[in-house]
Length: 484
Image (cartoon, rainbow, N blue to C red; front, side, top):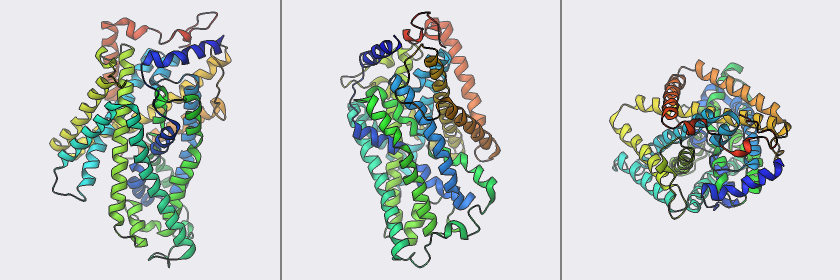
């Protein structure tokens, strides 16, 4: 009976949500790859290397295992019920309307502030080639172009993301191949000094101690933010039961190649002591090898990474905001789809708010802007925690006979999810211990107060939006039990 209810829900989803399932396997795979590669690797890794040395490789490996556990937990939920609302919808189903409300708005905020930062960053990168162009004008042009592309169709979004990801992948693979060539054949300016022994000779593998390595875990986890984006595509994938598990299962080799493999090569070519905070390790390595226009090449790659993040932000905020509107937890007008079956109204509102970032960057000091974007870090951790908790609740409902068994089981079941939750708790503690990143823990309570106030106001205005059960199949087939 549970399996029959599941099939009915899956069949009903496209009509209920109104979206066009236009994302093919090729695009889903590249969206998954691109989500795991961002500016955190191309730029942020320089700071992390300077703080921990070669042991950063271990930090990325450990964090990668946790990220895989999170994504496999998400995979269980996605194949159980692939919906565009994704994280918010699962939180609403398994934890209640308030959890869905908080998760939906928090993930929406995450991508709005990320979009603010990335459009500004993209404009800064353009100044490398054209310093005379006003920064605000570049940011506005990028915002308008990506906004238009997202309105046309989901296929356009998928195609743009495919090529953005292709640029990042090609850059990393090219660097790895060149680096291996230098290490084995000894050519280039770095050939005489490049050696894998740099991983342990320059002060050891833990040159600044194990404690310094542990502290880098928070930086590393931030570099993985966005990997869960593939979950938002569930409602528009051509064959979610097939393409989403395949995309998630390729995550380990993507982490091994693009993060661990790249770092091993970089730290073998150049001693870790030569990397500086704020300087891309890719630029430093390419410069050491003697590749012409190394800074320009990496600047172009980082530009595509920023635009990719902004493009993803427009996509995900539009879907999440429309999902909230469908549940009565956002203005009803945001449910509208255009003729291409994209949530035009929700995308427009989100894009306008991203545009506020351009204005803020022009009017207020950089420190104030950093306070706004710092919210994104804790928002990401909240989303990952909700995925894990919902998977645990789903397993409980399945074992009780209320829901069908998972067709894409997470290794370790609920135990891996509990372990990942414990790891995320450690990361929050590390954020609190870090003077530079502690501000995100101060900002998030303000957001929590706003959410509570908004939820209470919504309850007074529209009680049904607060207390209604998200889906009829939350009730047990025989007993009518609310699994929340």
